[in-house]
Image: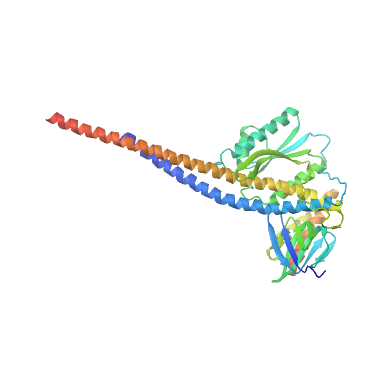
Amino acid sequence: MAKARAIVKRLKAVRNIRKITRTMELIATARFKKAMDRATEAKAYTQKLSEIVADLSAAQLRFTHPLLQPHETDRRGVLLVLTANRGMCGGYNANVLRLAMQRIGEYRTAGRELVLEVSGRRGLAYMKFQRQSVDRRYLQFEDKPRFDEVEQIADRYINDYIKGHIDRVDVAYTRFESASKQRAVVDTLLPIERIDQGRGEAGGHDFEFLPSPAEILQELVPAAFKARLFKCFLDAAVSEQIARMVAMKRATENAAEMIHTLSLQYNRARQTQITAELSEIIGGAAALE
Amino acid sequence: MATDRRLRLVIVTPETTLLDQDIRSVRFPLFDGQMGVLPGRAPLVGKLGYGELRYHADDGEHALFIDGGFVQIKGSVVSILTGRAIPVEAIDRSAVEAALEEARLRRALTDEELAEKQRDQQRARAMLALVRGR
């Protein structure tokens, strides 16, 4: 009976695990929908911003802003790494961290100074393991990043960049491309290379600008940067939920498969045992005759 | 301009589209003072200040606090882009008072710090004025 019992025990354990992963999958699905809604709602703001940029570009002005100009020397950069607070999401954290480590390596070999900022418990644990000193840590970003919180970070970057304390801001995160495709990337957010322009219906409207196109742009550039940084956080949140959903779905399927093979094994073991017992009885009876 | 008597107000923050509604008129703070918009306004792009946005809709008058940003008027649509928009009823008075106190006591040594301090103070006062008026 020993083998069959052991298999029953394992079977029970696997069934429990399947229950857990299945629940986690459902939770991730619900959270993904919420995060996705937030991301779609946030799109309206970026769209409007780029529309205004298009309207302004009709005003034909030459224009510079400190955030648009690369610094002459590129000595000190910020790398912001966005990871999850929790695991159980497949390669989501590992992919981002691999890219981040690559970028850190580039900085070290070039002898440039690096300010490392990490969001998410997973990333922090990894950096500790790699013996990288983390300058700032964020744990408050769960699956619903708030604009207020992101804005504080953005404001600090803007100030530091304008004052010349930092020469570049990179963000390592998972970009959401579609529901079936997310990719870990390192994006350069500062200096801003260009500001996206919406579909400008040129000449359609003759806008009045208050106070002036230049001053509006002055204000618009930081707003565009903040919106972009916020989008990084939103993308990371959505991608995390998708990654967790997929990972848990796979885990559930694997558990189901395991239950199948284990039941087969159990049946076989049980049968062998019965056969053995029968032959023992028959053997015993035969010996008595 | 008797052709188009409709006016649509869209308020977008980075997090969400807060409002998308047909209205009769709207008043909001521009960088240098209040501005009122009635249907048929010429196209405009402007920089916003902080303060009270008040609009008349069919179901009455509503007020929000908005915190900088931009306005775009195009055809019959008024789009307000702002970092934060809080309905007046939702403003937490004690939090605003604390913010004002903090800004008032903050040490400002450089020009930028001073500008920031003044800006924060003015913003808190504007918010407080709204709360008292309600």
